[in-house]
Length: 276
Image 1 (spheres, rainbow, N blue to C red):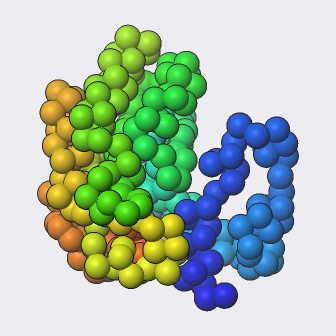
Image 2 (tube, helix red, strand yellow):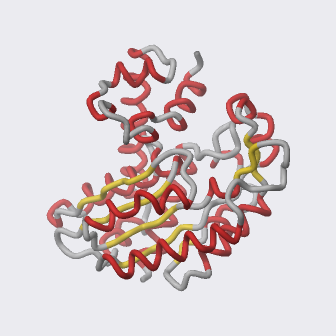
C-alpha cells in the first residue's frame, strides 16, 4: 500500500473518533486501530509518527516567517487560556492546522500555559456537530474555533445535486451552534468557512467514488455564506484559498488538505485571529 493511500485512510477512517461512543473503543491500541482500517500496524505507527513530526516541522517553519511569530504573540489569549477547536476531518487530521497551531503556541508562548483541545470527527456534518457540542461547551473554554460544514455540501447517491444536509438545515444548525455557545459558555467565538474543493479530483478518487461521494463548489459556497452570516468573526478560507484551491494545497482526492494546505490554514488563522 502506498504512503499516500495509507495516509488517506488514516485521515478519513479514524474509528477512535467516528465510533467513540462504542464500548471499549477508548482502550484500543494503535495496533488495534491499524487492523480496523486495514493497515499493517508497523506501517500505521510509522506514518502516524511521520505526520506528527510533520506538524512540528510545519509549526517551526511558520514561526520562522518574518511576521508570524510576532502575530502569535499578539493573539488575544491570557495565561492559562483554553482553546477548543471543533471540526471534521480537515481538523482531525494528525497533521492538521489545529495541531500545527498547538505546536506554535507551545513553542512561542510556553510560559502562558495555553491549551488546545481538538474536538474533530471525520465525516461529520453540522447535524452531527450539534449532537456532541455539549461536551465542548461544558469545558467552559475561553475560545471556540468552529470549522464545520464541508460535509453538509456532500452529495451521495443517485441525485448529484441534492446535498445530504439541505442548505436551509445547515443555516439552522450553524445558528443553533452559535446560540448554544453564547448561552452555555463564556467562550469567544471564531469561525472558519469551508474551503473549496477540486471537483474533478473528488469525482475521480478511488476512495470517495467507492462511497458515491461528490462535492460541488456551488454548494460549498452556500455553506460558506451561512458561516459569514452568523455575525461572529470569520476567517474566510473559501475566498482566501480560491475555488478550486491551488493544487499543492490539496491531497489527490481534491477534498482533504495536504501538509502545505494545513500550513496555509494555520497561517490564515494566525493572521485573522491576531487582528481581532
